[in-house]
Amino acid sequence: MKKRRNLILTLAALILFGGFLYYAQHTFNPYILRILNLCAVFTIFAVTFNLIFGYTGQFSLGHAGFAAVGAYVAALLTMSAAQKSANFFLKPIISPLANVEIPFLPALLLAGLFASVVGSLVAWPALRLRGDYLAIATLGFSEIIRILLVNLQPITNGALGLKGIPSYTNLYWSWGAALVCIFIIKSLINTSYGRAMSAIRDDEVAAEALGVSLFKHKMMAFAVSAFFVGVAGALMANLISTIDPKVFLFFLTYQIVGITVMGGMGSLTGSTIAAILYTVFLEALRPIESPFTIGPLNIPGIPGMRMVLFSILLLTVILFYRRGLMGTNEFSWDWLIGLFHRKDTALAAPTGGAEK
Amino acid sequence: MSLLKLDSLTKQFGGLTAVKEFSTGLEAGELCALIGPNGSGKTTIFNLITGIYTPTSGTVTFNGQDITGWRPDRITACGIARTFQNIRLFKGLNVLENVVVGKHLRLKSDPFSATFHLPNYRREDEAMFAEGLELLDSLGLSRLAYEAPTSLPYGEQRKLEIARALATDPKLLLLDEPAAGMSPTDSEELMVFITHILKTYKLTILLIEHQMRVVMGICPRIIAIDHGETIAEGTPEYIQNHPKVIEAYLGVADYA
Image 1 (cartoon, rainbow over the protein chains, first blue to last red):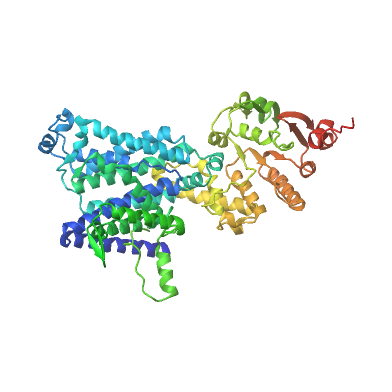
Image 2: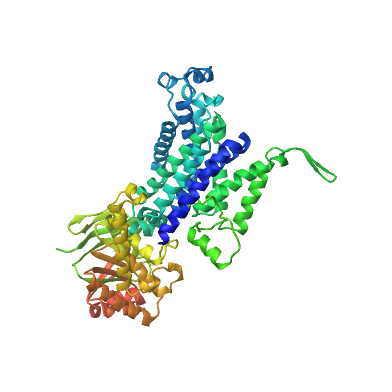
C-alpha cells in the first residue's frame, strides 16, 4: 500500500523532473545549461565518494585520478580522426586510436569500465592500508595517473591536452547518469552487501570476525565508485570540450571531499543537495573575484577568492556542524508526507525527488 | 577426535613471547574456561585461533582441518565465532541489522542480483531477517530489534555481541571476558545464559575470564595460564588448590 504510493510518487517526480529537463534544455541559455550539467557531474562525484567514505569508511583521495581516466577515454573515443590529427601536432597519436570514433553511450560505458579497472588496480595494493595511510596512497596513485597523462604524449597529447571534444553532454545524459548512479548506489547500500560495507566502516576487526571479507567488499565499493566517477569524468570532458591534465589536480578531489562532508557522510540526499548548492554558489560568487568597492575600500580582483570562501565554509561545517546538511538522513516520501501531516505549511521537497 | 586442537602454539611480538608452546584440545559440546592474570596471553590465544594473528609456530586444527594462518573471515565461515573483550558493535546499524550482518557470509546471491533486488535475493534477504529476529527472540532481545545498539544497557550489549556471533552458525564459540565490568549478580546470570546457549545451539564454548569465581560454577574444565604457558589444567577444585595458580594470582609468600 505505502510501497505502491511511494512508487507512484517517485514515478511522478521523475516525470516532472524529466519535463523540467526538457524545458530547461530547450529554453535556458548555454551558460545556465553548463551549470546544470556540472551540478549533475558533481552529484555523481559526491555520491560515489560517499559510497567509499561515508558507507564503507575508506578514506580514499583518488577521485581526480579516476575522473581523469574516464575523461580521457571518452574524449579519445568520441573525437573524430580529423580533430585528433589537429590536436596531436607535436607527435602523432598511436595508430589504432587515431581513427576510432564511436557513439557517446558506448564511450561513456567504456570510460566507466576503464576507470573501474584502474580503480580496482589502485585499490588492490592500497586497501591493505587503513585510514590516513590509505588516503596518502590513493592520493599518490591519483598523482601518478596525472603524471602519466602528461608524459604519455602519443596517447594523451601530454600537457597540451585535448581540444575540440564533441560536446555531446546535455541535461538528459548528465542527469540521466546521475539518477542511474544514485539509484544503483542506493540499492547497493540497502542490500546485505551494503550492510557488510557499513559494518566494515564501523569496526573492521568485528566485521572480519563475523565472516565479512574486507578485501572483497572494499574492492566492490571501489569498483562501483570508480565506474561512475569515470562516467562523470567522461560527461565533464564532453561538456567542457577541452581537457588537460591540470583539470584533474588534487584540487578536484578536495572539492569532492568538501561537498560530501558538507552534505553529510552517509546521506546520498545530502551529497546531491550539497553538490548542486556548491556548483551554483561557485558561479554566483564569481563577482567577488572581480574588482569591487565597499564604501571607501577598494578591493582589486583576486582570482581564487571563491576558494577562500569555500574553505571557510568547509571549516565552519567541520567545526560547528559536523553532521553536515543531512547527517545520515535520507529524503523519503514518508518523511515528506509526515511533514505535511504535522503542520499544513507548504514545504518544497529538497531535490527533484530523485531519491526513493 | 577433538573439534579444536591447538598444537604447541607460539606467538612472539619482537622479543616478547606472549604465548609459548600452548597445546590443548576441545571436544564437541564442551564448555571450557581459560583463566589467568592480566597479560597472561588469553586474548592472544583467541586471536591466534581466529586468525587475527598468525602464530610464530605451531598449528590450529579445527574439525580435522589445518586452519593455521587463515584469514579471519574464512575461519568464521568454517564455524568459529567470537566476541570481544571491549564491545565492538556496529554503531551505524540497528540491533537486528547487527545480527543480520552475521548472516552475510552465508548469502548466496551475487552483488548484481542483490543490487537489483531480484527474486532470489529478496527471498534470501527476507529469510536472513526472519532468522535474525528469531535468534533475537530466543535470546530475549527481540523487543530491542530496531534500537540503536549504543542505546542498549551494558549487559544487553554483551548479549547482542553473543547473538551476533551466533548468527554465523558457529560450531565453536569463543567468548572473551563476557562478564567484564559486570556486577557479581549480573555475571552469574550471564553464566546461566551461556550454559543455556551451549545446549540450545549445540555449541562448544571456550571462554576467557580472569575472575575464577565466575567460571567455577559452570565450567567442568579450566585451563589456567600465566606468561603464555599452561600452569594447570583440570576441574575447578583442582585449579583452585593448585599452588602454581595461587602463586600466579597472589604471588609467592616470601617470609625470608
